[in-house]
Length: 93
Image (tube, rainbow, N blue to C red; front, side):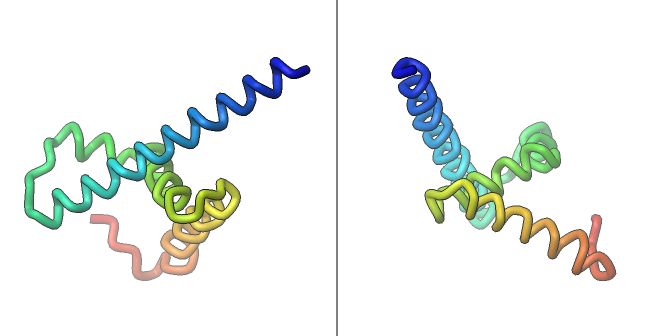
């Protein structure tokens, strides 16, 4: 049982580190856009791909809260407000 607990703890640390790296990437990407540094087409396509977009948003929320549950709630709230509440004003292009 101790091995399983250690493995779970190591996985948790690795996942937290991965989330923090993704959050840092999101910050760097945003700064680059603010500095008007051009983004490569494939890079833009990848970061705008919905699963990656959700993961980056979740990672940013995790970096702010250090809590997966709160990060998930913030991410769901963002997309809920965007696609459900703001549906009539959604700019797709």
